[in-house]
Image 1 (cartoon, rainbow, N blue to C red):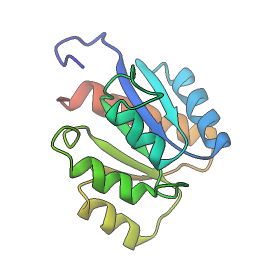
Image 2: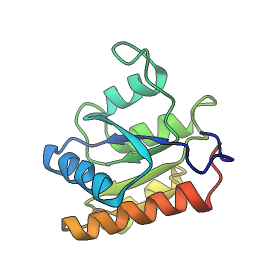
Image 3: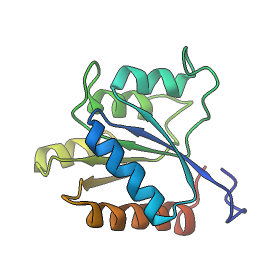
Image 4: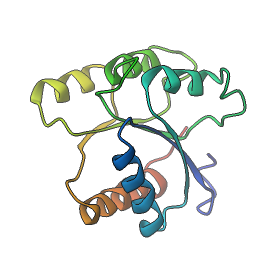
Amino acid sequence: MNGSDPQALIDILFVEDSPADIELALQALREAGARSRLFVVSDGEAAMAFLRREYPYSRSPRPDLILLDLNLPRKDGREVLAEVKGSADLKQIPIVVLTGSPNDEDVGNAYALNANAYLKKPANLDELIETVKLIEAFWLSVASLP
């Protein structure tokens, strides 16, 4: 992402296994008017394949931001977080943990693994739209992305 172009699209990788949450996020992005392209994978192994541009994601873009659920099949979100932040090639990608767990231990562990933010999934569409707007405003307008 080119930080000097305010009209540029941001590529977001959404790692989420719940079809309902995926649909809500897509609807929230549409309603929020987000300047982004959302790429979705439903498990941790697919997330790492996407990020490493392995088959079937060999043509995937490098995301500007990752929205990561913690409780995922095949490879847990905590493992994905540790792998990404432990990789010289990937560690600069900001990761926002977006999960249903308000557990203090999960929050602490996510930050110990170098998550850039930890957000509890909103309970309804209106709250999710507001959260998406805030994420977009911060990561597109306030923060400078690598």
